[in-house]
Amino acid sequence: MPKKSMDISLVEEEKSDLTFFNIEEEDENETLKALKQSYVTTNYKDETILNLQSELKSSSEEVSKEIKLRSYNDYNNSLELASRGYITKAVELIDSALEINPKDVDILNLRGLLKLLKCDFSKAFESFYTGLCYGNNELSRKYVNILSSEEFKVFLGRYNHSIRFINEELNQESIHILNNIIDEDPDLIEPYVILYLLYNKLGNEGKKEFYFERLREVDKDNPIFEEDKEDNVLETEKTSEKNEVVTTKKHKRNILPYVIIVFLAVGLGIYHLSNKAKIDNLTSELNTKEDKLNEVDEKLNDANEKLDETNKKLEETNQVLDETKTKKEIATSDESSLYKKAVQLRKAGNTEEAILYYEGVIKYGKTKNYISASIYELASLNEKIGNYDEAIKYYKKYINTYTPEENYYDDAFYQLGLTYYEKGDLAKAKETFYGLRSEVPDSMYNNSKVKEILSE
Image (cartoon, rainbow, N blue to C red; front, top):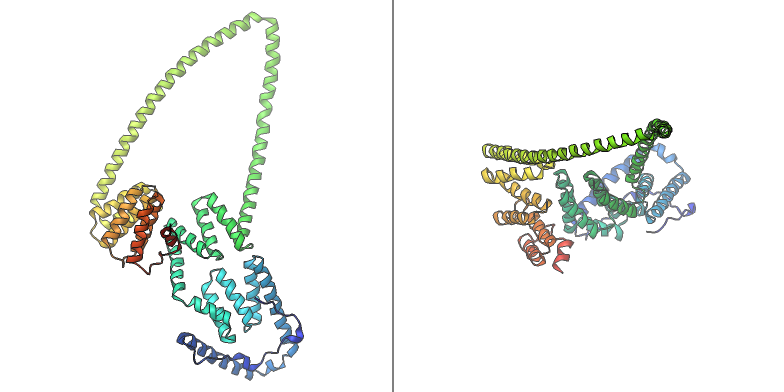
């Protein structure tokens, strides 16, 4: 985008008729045409009020130009920062420029682009649309059309799905979607922020650092970096305090043994010189006692091994009792209680036990919603623990039992294909993804990842 000239003589005074903007009668988009009309009506009202406020007439032309120059300065600085990757500060400056000069098309377009990078889609559309109304320019029109398109609607649905999955603790599903979004649009900032925070929550330091650095590449002054710096300072202070305490304790603890060793060495030397025979006798007695201690240690080790065997058998017995108790509880509970218990266990990380309760819902349940959700969860949980055969079984069961109108139908298709792919069965993966295209052609899961696998 072009920089603004800072020559005050070139700045035009704001004219009353600039408040209004042209409406193209041949414009085919009726929605845009109607919105433009509403802008005209609103501006006509505002202009009338301004004309009635006589005190505003006293504002000089030079003051108006000075204000515009301030907005140009903020615009130029924002453009410079954005080109160097400092998007957060660039957004602050362009917002400031817009407050001063709200009708400038260049300012509106730059704000739209920056808000788009920040994934603030409503503000981006607002800026581009306002710029289109004021200036009827190609850049504004291009992005208004993009943000109004069916393709963007699908993208927004996928983006919202990723957020919903996080709220439902379906973290891996969210990660899949966000990674696909990054592959397709690597300059969007928010997916990196979400993945960084998500991996931080999961305790995966490697992935957390990876997305931390990727975020730095697209937004060098993101607020995340400041928060991370504060956390590191606090951690350093705690570590420093801990080291001081440990060092002090070590110094205090080490003085006494050294003194004792010195006195023992001197005493033993004198004793050795005065009576070597007694030392030999003492050594012999110590060796005898050491042999006896070794015998005791061997007996103790044998006893510990027997105790370990007993504990192992006891644990196995307790496990059988727990499983029996769980099976009894599952067999006697209603499907609503079983499903709620399964969800609680899944969120708590008790995957194996959650699987038992979801299986109970399928075995004893009668309500379609509980059963269908349980089938999908069983597939997802088995995939999570690497039990791919069981995962495939339940994904296929969901697809074969329900119709494309169900909540997780295309999810199940997509995850089944990825599971085959992760197992190394490319033929099955392709067959599944072709099925997804056929059954749900408009699914958001017909994405670049699917195209990539089908092209192999």
